[in-house]
Each structure stands twice: as structure tokens, then as C-alpha cells.
Image (cartoon, rainbow, N blue to C red; front, top):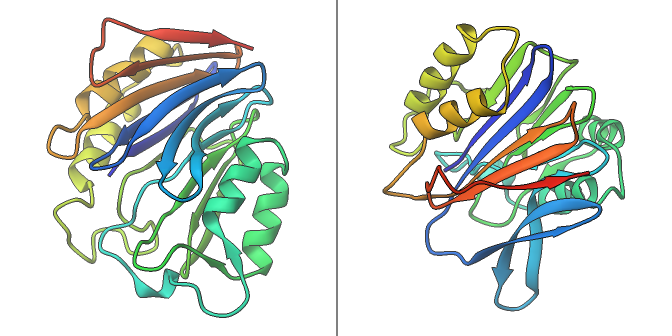
Length: 227
């Protein structure tokens, strides 16, 4: 599942709920970033989500319903590897944008993972493997849950998160120009999940270079990292 938020008010604030079922995760920090890593039985820990010191943020919601156009077919780029390259500062958001516009991008077989990416300037890039990419230059705000932005609500699925999207959209439309970390956590709290549980809620104050996060919906225990 998952919910991604980027808000450009007086500050650029990025929010992320990682909703995860049946997978092992951990949070690792260093001087270059705050990484939410997923354990793969064969490959070990993968830094798939999080923030880096350059000001980039990487989220990767699963698209429901699954679209088999995202399955690997011949030559192309793996969306997971593009996300990791941005998170680890091997590529910039603009470089990822150029790749997504010129080359086929695929996911892993049987799962349509989407990219919800942003940079220090508050620019937003969405990639939906097999469907295309969307780029927004410093929008007032953007939200991604678990439906394709190309399809909106034309296809229904219990986990697509249209209700979460609508709730977050309503709160962001009403938000003041002073929208800050605590306001973003309020939205993440409002869209947190239990059935497919929200295991990490993270907010990146890009303007201040500060990352905040809590785990397992324990909202009064918040950790932070300054860059």
C-alpha cells in the first residue's frame, strides 16, 4: 500500500507512509541519508525508500490493480534500480526523468511498483512502469497512493487507496502556507493503515535538512536526523 506526499508551501515538506505486510524492514542512517531497507532472502538488505542529504526523497507505492505491462519485456530499466540510484545519489532526479522519458521502464514480474520521487527544489517525478512518467515542476502539492495516476479510479481494487488519496487531498487543500512537519504527520496519521500496517511514517523537512520518522504508528516516539 503506502502514501506519498510532497507539499511546497513556505517550506518543501515530504511525507511517506510505508504500509508493509509480510516483509522485514529496518531503518539505517548515515551522513548521506535515512534509508528504509527491505530484506531480500537472496540479496540481503535493499535501500528502497527514504531521504538523502542532497534533498531527494524516494517512495515506491505498489500499483493496484496489477498491470502486466510492467513485467520485464526485452530491454529496459528496472524501476527499483532507478530508485536506488536516486536515493544513493548515483543519479539526479533530472537524469532519472530523462531515462524514464526515453527508455522503457519495468518492474519485477507480477508486481507493478511505482516511483514517487522528489528533489530539493520540490520537483516531483512519478514513474508507472509500462504506462509512463509524469513530471511536475514544484507543484503546490502532490499525492500518490496505490492507483495509477494514468487510470485514476477507472479500475477498482480494495487496496488502491482512493479514500486515502481523497483524505490527504482535502487536508492539503485546506493547509496554510505555514505547513510544517507536525502538519504532515497529522496527514500521515489520518491515512495510516492497520490491515496492511503502516510500519514507518517519515517526514522530510527539505528546507531545513531534517528527517523525522516513527514506527508502527507510535506517533509520540519520533526519531530525527539532521543533514
